[in-house]
Image (cartoon, rainbow, N blue to C red; front, top):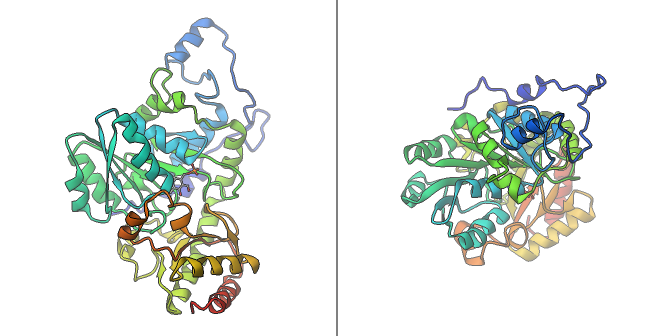
Length: 402
Ligand code: PLP
């Protein structure tokens, strides 16, 4: 199913950008506005007809374009637009496709912020969303109405780690003339949604792609036509809503992107090791690399093998008190940090039911299987993962869940 010849990290490596004095990194464009030699060129640029000219940094900057190009190469799309955060990429893209009266079919297990946007915010604009179990293609198709414009999902969902069949969803989207929008934040490099038929691929760069938990960022990867429309000065949602990335940040994220392939391999290797051990110890463990995961073979059919199954796993500590006790003890013993977010060199853990998914009402959490004892781990880059496992096991025994 997956295009096994597509090597996303090669696409990043093959790009060459030099600084203006021959620097091995491109110069950072330290300007919020740009001069024009003629008034005519300024007019043409505002009309969107002057390639290679910059008008104002909310629209684009050379540094942002470098990063966008690298991310488009990674995802195999024509181009991309970077944004100030993941939500700054997702929300304008959805609004670009939908107007009052339109309808969205979304996976019910998605990041809490995106869920809150679709559930509470877009209805104010008469845009309504049906939330479905994305693993059931027939449920997705049944939810489509004549007003539907978009199918939205995460490849690997936050926090339940359900796997979306991107090729299957793309087929449905095509059949009904819809756009398939995919948030690939949990699985950069490991899954290439555009190669499987997704129309638009988005990321929170705040997570694995930047990887140092020091900045926010987002990206929309798609066709030139879409990105031009998002940046249009008259009706482009990225341009008008204004969540644009700063050039300094774009430059630093580009530098971190170059080590993403090594980091993802190590996150995946460590996460698989821990998931296998913890599952064998008898705790309910969810990780796409485990044979017990319902989406395991689907993931195998979609993945770029060399990057593994990603760095996120969940365990169920039984109840919230036990989950909190375990997380506090692990933090005390320096196994990681009790913190939301993902993709840091240290392991990060949180209980999504009371944090990143707290926007989802309790009854809906129960229905989708989000238990209050669930702990989400973003596994770090630990050099000695066996030592980490032994220390984690001691913590689990101490709080009485093993
Ligand atoms: N998408 C997913 C899957 C996320 O986990 C998050 C944040 O946690 C976002 C989007 C939003 O990204 P940001 O916090 O950069 O706005």
